[in-house]
Length: 244
Image (tube, rainbow, N blue to C red):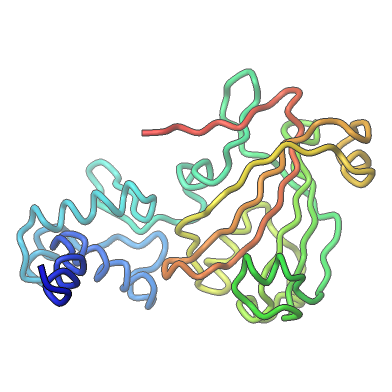
C-alpha cells in the first residue's frame, strides 16, 4: 500500500462519528445550549442527509460521553452541568458506606498569580501566564474530605475578579458565565503524605496518608480549561471507578 492510500485509510471516519463531530460543533458554537431540547432523530437525519440509524448511533455516543441526556417521553437534551449524572462522572470519591453524596465546599482563598512550569504545561499556556488559583475544602456531612487547588487560565475566565461568590459546582459556573462546557478530564492518582497545610485544613495529623488526584479538565474542543489538585482523606472514603 502506497503512502497516499495508507494515509487516506487512516483518515477515514465512520459516518456516525462524522455526524457526531458536526453535532458537537453546534454545542461549541452555542447553537445548542446546556439544557436545550435538540431536534428529533428524524429531523436531524433529514437535515443532515443520513439515515435515522446513523443519527441514533451518533446520539448514543454523545449520551455515553455525558454530552446529552435522554429523558423518557420528553426527548434528548444537551446535558447541563447540574445534571447529577455529570457531577458524579467527574467526582469519584465515595463514602465507605457506599451511598453517592456530592460534597459541599467552602473557599479558603483565591488569588491571581503567574503559572508555574507545571501549571503552564498542564494548561497549555506560557510559563508565567496569568492564572487564578482557588483553594477550597470539600466536606461530606460535617467531615472534611479533601482540600483542592483549582488553577484557571485568566484569559479563559474574563471578569473572574468580579465574582462575588464561587459556587460549589464550578463546572456550571464555567458554562453559565463563560460558555465553557467541560467534556472530558484526565486524572492521575498518587499516594502522598499530608503537609502541615493539609493537616490544618483536613483536621488530620501531618504525615497522614492521603490520595492525591491531579486532574486536567478540557472543553468540547479538547482545550485544557482547568488544573485541579485534590488531596483526599481515605480513612472513611475511597475512589471508585466503574470500568466498562
